Length: 318
Image 1 (cartoon, rainbow, N blue to C red):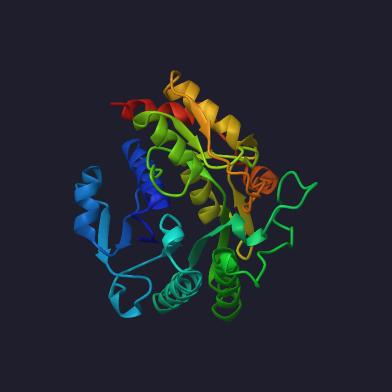
Image 2: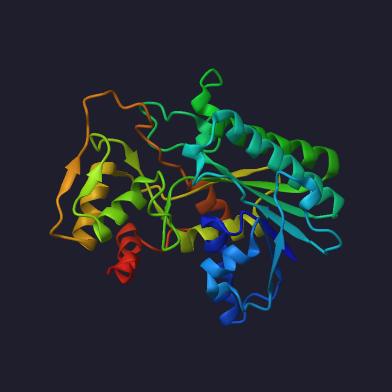
């Protein structure tokens, strides 16, 4: 069985939809176990997953070791549980603790169950601010989030989680591999969280105007959730233990151009409104991965363009 934490979130649903498609063509034969705090709520919210014979839901919480399942045969684990969607509402202290405690618990769970392979979904946040002159961040860039700022809790928590994987690989010979994930788009993307892409799509589908919270100059890139699932599973199966791989698109787009692209595809008649108050931008000006390692070492590539990814949301229009 493949055991997945965070299986009810964006990454988890992307994986489940990918496995469903693989099952339909007979290219996937494994069972999948999902850890969730509320199986009933998940299935009520996502009824398309309710009749999958190969899917088993376990009620539990990565932060409470005693709630993890007992007496199950688990071969591999994908640890994708992180409150990134609700991160804006958590204190930095809780953000850091949730990441590190949850990862430590699942690593212990892996050792206890003689798991042979472990994938951690980390984040490009581990690199800290992308410096001027560096167009794309490679895996060997040794920048980091500043430990003297509470706002660095997410990135530093992911660094600590990665190091825990390193320590468990060294001590227990657990095959741990890291996926450093950037930004994504797809039908399971939350539209009312703190993601610019989701907010723009929500405004385009349901609002009167598309709101940009700053001056629109920061650069981002977006990978479709289908490609995300493909890449995660390839890294899970074929990535070198002890290595990290960037996961995301390397095609940069400014937030301003993204807002107009979403508008042009989903609601051509709506205005784009910039809410810049004149304050200095405090976030990341550039957040673009170098994905040459995944391309060359694992033969991965981007199959769905940003434009096609946005078009997927046309079916949501009311």
